[in-house]
Length: 77
Image 1 (spheres, one colour):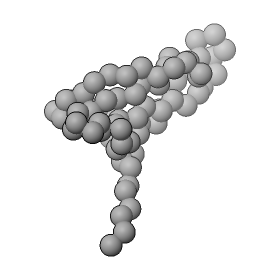
Image 2 (cartoon, helix red, strand yellow):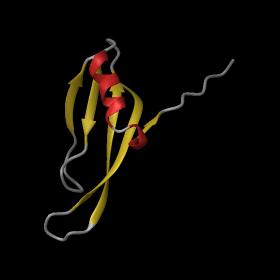
Image 3 (cartoon, rainbow, N blue to C red):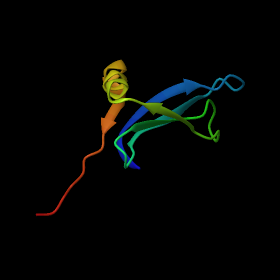
Image 4 (cartoon, one colour):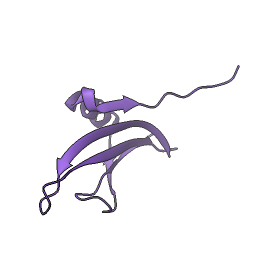
C-alpha cells in the first residue's frame, strides 16, 4: 500500500478532557483501490481499515481540506 494523504485533527479525551492529536491515512493499494486507516478513538487504540472507492476518495478530500495533507513523492530523472 502507498500512503497518498494524511488527515490531522484534534479530539478531547472523554475521561481526562485533554486534547490529543489524531491522524488518518489514505492509502492506494496495488490493485488501484483505496483504503482509509482511521485513527482509533483514543490514543494508543488500533487503527480501523475502511475501503474507499475512487469517488469516495475524492469526497473524503472535500470533507475537511484544511486538515488533509497530500504526500509528495519525489522521483529521480
